[in-house]
Amino acid sequence: MSMDFQQVNSVLPQKFPLIMVDKVLERVAGERIVCVKNVTGNEMVFLGHFPGYAIFPGVYITEALAQSAILLFKDEDTQDTDSLYLLYSTKMTFKSVVVPGDQMRMEIETQKATKLGIIVDAKAYVDDKVVAKGELIFSVKKSEDI
Image (tube, rainbow, N blue to C red; front, side, top):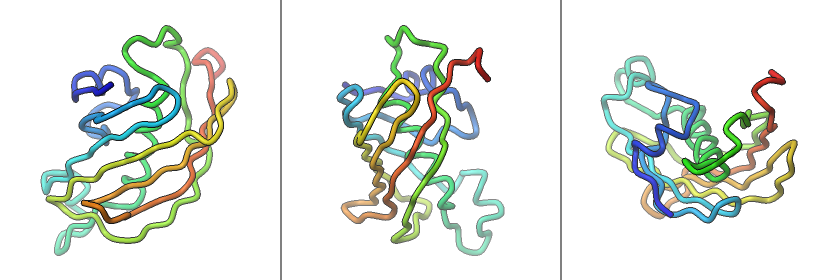
């Protein structure tokens, strides 16, 4: 199953300017997802990171991977609309910089999922080169518990 930007926007709790997923290319609910983020020179973060040589920050790459993971477990048809997926812990390694003009492909695979938490393997690519990889751990909360 794929999702366009409007569908992504309707599912993610994040909104402009922090939506880090432009499109879902493929998705097997609860198992695996592949998403893309088109990094442009118009990103607000490039005003300060860095004005002379724009580099997409690692924390934004991690956020893009985390949002991809949220899309793995939620979609427009999910009946459980009150669950929040909160990034609890990360173990990331960054291999290369991401710059304006790059298309970042995020691949997420589930390691373990329970009602209370989720652990996923996350990789970000530019072309066929791994630019970041690691493990993301989410806490799953009901919105009334926060």
